[in-house]
Length: 333
Ligand SMILES: C[S@@+](CC[C@H](N)C(=O)[O-])C[C@H]1O[C@@H](n2cnc3c(N)ncnc32)[C@H](O)[C@@H]1O
Image 1: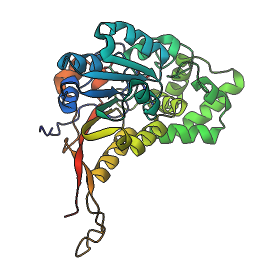
Image 2: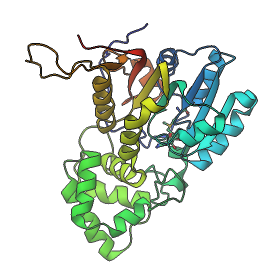
Image 3: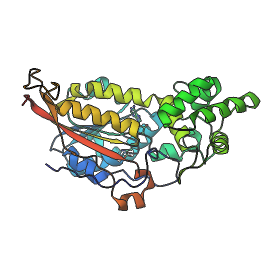
Image 4: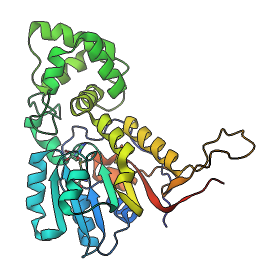
C-alpha cells in the first residue's frame, strides 16, 4: 500500500477550472491510477469522465478491466465516448450526475464497484469553449451550465438575484472578500444594461475589486457563480452521503478537488469513515462500539509535483485524497 506524503502546495486555492488556455492533461494521473489499484476484471466508475484522460489510462493499465464513465455534460460525454470507442464494450457511458449512480450501475448489470474516481470541476473542453461561458477572457455568453441548457444560467442568476443573495453566493462559494462591493456593482450595472457576456462581467469585477496576487480579479466571482449554477457542493455532499452504497469491500475511492470548499468536505467525510470510536476524546473507555468503514490511503493530502504544475497550470490547485473500503468494519479500540 502506498501512502502519499504532503508536498508543499504551490499556487493558491480557487484556480481549478480557471480560465487559462491550455491543452488537456489529466491531473495527477499517475497518483490517481496507482491509488485506484486497477484489478484484473475490475469494475470502476469514473464519475467525472470529462475528456476521458483518467479513464483511458485506467483501461490501458489492465486489459480486462471495465469502466463506467459518467458525466453530466452531454456534449463532453458524446465527444469522449467517440474518442474512446476503440475500448469497445469495456467502456460504458452514462449521462447524469455522479451522486446518482444507481441507474447507471443497473444499466451495466453492476451492483457495486472496485473503485470510483471523481476529478471535480471542469474539463479542458468545457473551459476552452467560449460558448459555454466558463472562461472570462474568451467573451462568450455568461452561461456556465455543465448540463448544457439545464436550469438557470449564470446570466439568469446575475439578472434576477437581489444584491444580498448575490453577495452571499460570491462570498460563500468564492470566499471573495469584496463580495458585497461586487454585488452592488452588478446590481448598479444591470439597471443600465443586462450583463449577458462573460467578459463584461469580468471587466465589471476588475473595476471594483482590487487585484490581489497574480490571479484575475474575477476568478473567485466566476468560481462562485459556476458552483451556484451547477449546484456543485450539493452534488458532492449527496455523493459523500451515498458512496458506500456503491463501493464493494476492498474498493478504492479517489477524489481530486480544486478548491477548499470541496476538499474540506472530502477530508471530513474520509476522517469520519476512518474513525472507529466516536466517544468524546476524554472518555475513559469506548462505549460507542463504533467501527471504521474505510482506511485512508493518503495520510496527508496529495498535491501535484512542481513539474506537473509547470506543464499544466490547471493542476495547480488540485488536492487528491484516497481511501480503501474495509472488507470487514474494524471495531473500536
Ligand atoms: C475536471 S473534468 C474531468 C477530467 C477527466 N478526469 C479527464 O481526465 O479528462 C470534470 C468533469 O466532470 C463533469 N462533472 C462535474 N460535476 C459533475 C457531476 N456532479 N456529475 C457528473 N459529472 C460532473 C464535468 O462536466 C466535467 O466534464
